[in-house]
Image 1 (cartoon, one colour):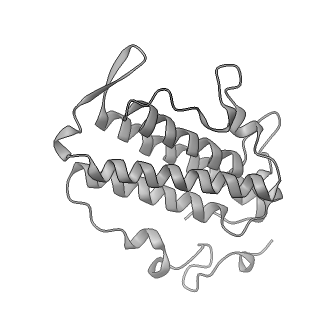
Image 2 (cartoon, rainbow, N blue to C red):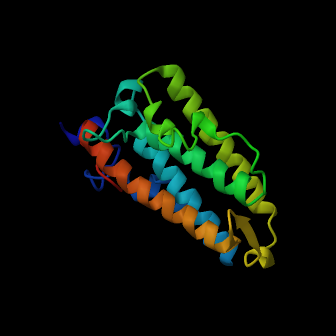
Length: 192
C-alpha cells in the first residue's frame, strides 16, 4: 500500500490533506464554554467522516479483530445512537424515544452487530447519524450559556449539562481513535 492511494497532501505526504485544506482547521476560535464544546464536537464529527471517506460498504463493515464486532460502520451507527441517547433522551427528557438500530437491554450491541456490508445499511447509518447530529446541534445552539450548570435526570442521578457535553467530546475522541486504527488496517491511511 502506498500513500498515493489516499493522500491529497503535497507538503506532508503522510497526512490526508495539507493543513491549509483540512476542514477542521477552518473552525472558528471559540468564545465561551458552550462554543468550546460545540467546536470540539464539530472537529471530531468531521474527523469521523474523514476516516470513513472513500470506502465502500465492505470496507466500512470490516471488523477489527475477532471476536470484536467493531467496524467503521458500527462506529457510525453507535455514534448516531449516542447522539440520540444523550441529546434527545437525556438532555431533552424524551426517554420514550425508541432507541436506534434495535438497541435494547437484551441487544445492547445491535448498532455494531447490524453493521453489515450492504450499501443500504451504510446509507441508512449516515443519514441517521447526520439527522441526529443536526438535531443535537440545533438544540445546543439554542441552549443559553447560563444553563450549562443545570442538571438533568438520568436514571437515579442528576447530571450537569456541561458534564454530558464533556462526555460527548470524550465519546467521540475515544471512537475516533478506534477509527484511526480501523482505517489504517483497511488501506494504510493514518490519523491526522
